[in-house]
Length: 463
Image 1 (cartoon, rainbow, N blue to C red):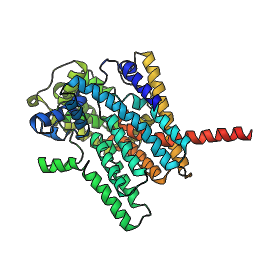
Image 2 (image 1 turned 90 degrees about the vertical axis):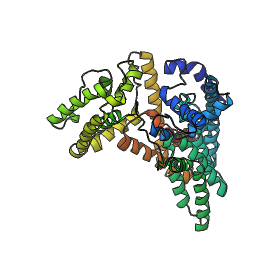
Image 3 (image 1 turned 120 degrees about the vertical axis):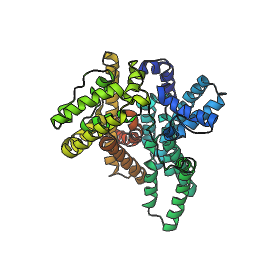
């Protein structure tokens, strides 16, 4: 924990500005503000909404991180700069506590101090959580609540431990939706245990109550206050997240692994070079050229990404956009890919996504910096190594009783399910979307290291 504190403080003081390339690296544009604005609108206008001018703004951000920001905002006397400082150091403190939680989770399930220390050390030194700790996004806080919920689920105890497991995991899901699948996995682990039916019923009841009083309040609010059934979120809020941009990304995800170079070519107003796989017949080429021109001319989302990300062009007002026409065209081409290019859509692209998810080795926008390319390659290489050790640890744990079967079951099905969903269905791969799965894999990765240490020790003893 002390080593983890030192690494995190050093990153905040020195490393963050270098890694992210700006002094106020903890602020990440519109996403940070959308969480903050959601709480401010609730405080000032009585309506929880990321944007009061947009109806879907009421459902854009589940309220977990917004309320955390709001608490810090009130403690800071409604002064934003102080609010951000409180959040940065609070997130750092919570993350250091997470090191302890991982130690305790592993110790409870294995009764082995060396294995537990290795798990805690892997987390304390894992670079991709260190770089997210001070960022004013929901990642860090959701990780803390995720492991806190897992700790209560694994620890010894009676009915109330299931309430707290569901409650804290529900808070994690309110911060980041990728934590939501853990709730049914926890419940399934309860139901397939060998307990008597009466015991199972009590445990499941306490677990359901924990969900109801945490994550459940979000869909209840949406139905009661807004008369809409929304269990997750509605990202159709206009601006950056308009129909033209979503349909463009959907088509690119249907035909290839990366969105480049086509995405940048459209944003920069260049001629788009579509790959051969994206063109089934000549009519597709004509339609793609037309759609790319429409994106540049009257696509709302494209104009926002160009204006705010590249300082180019003008924002397209609602009365001048052609978003529906762009959406219709790209949706048609995406469906055509599903029907007539099945091998690419259902096999080659998902396989490429898996390769990228496991073996990504570079950062966008750093092509001119040799040092940053080396650092990125090293960091992502370390991540790939830990993923390999993690899956190897899951395989080895399946034949070894050192890891509790509930913990093994939860990590295995969550990680496999999440990677499968992201690579086959969602297809928009950002490494932060894999953060929670990667961190859970650190426990079986530590198990691989533990077995390796045992083998080395045994060989020395024999010698």
